[in-house]
Length: 230
Ligand code: GDP
Ligand code: MG
Image (cartoon, rainbow, N blue to C red; front, side):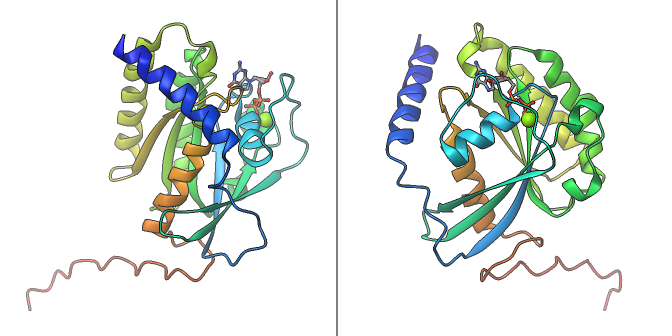
């Protein structure tokens, strides 16, 4: 019952957030950080819908496959008053053929792995294919976000926790020390969509990636321990 209450609050929160869009700011601002964000996962899981909802506030029941790479921008003011511009790259439908190019993947500061929480095959495919495919070309400090979309259609909430745990464990196996977050969202209802990108912006400001542009100083590369005893 408490669980259900939590969900209802989350839905109510999402509605209030989408009405009060004070957190996102317009682009005519001085930017502190600009980062590339990529979105991968099976076709039909709602990647384009999530991006559209976040950047244009709209949702289409019949989303058409993108032609060419589509890059949408979202500028967010973080709690520390930094303006972070996320350049969110959408696939051009290549995910149908499992042929996402390396130039799409390279240089991304955050990667969203999207599955449809009503189609657990799409979660299994993250584990069996997408994690490994993307990992080979990613920078060390890329943030990983596992996103369960179409939460509005979910009948049995209990299935999600073990799926998140399995996916997170699998990501940790192939990328030890990775920064991993999990979100349940609905592009259709706008549930958690703002929170998802705000969270990414906060994490990027707190730990600016090597591949970023802006006035925030990038982190110095970690020193490797000297084998010399002197
Ligand atoms: P993509 O291939 O991963 O980019 O997926 P699309 O964004 O094109 O979405 C595929 C289908 O799922 C479309 O018919 C969308 O309207 C639908 N869809 C996307 N997100 C949601 C959601 O949160 N809830 C529901 N009910 N349908 C969704
Ligand atoms: Mg798409």
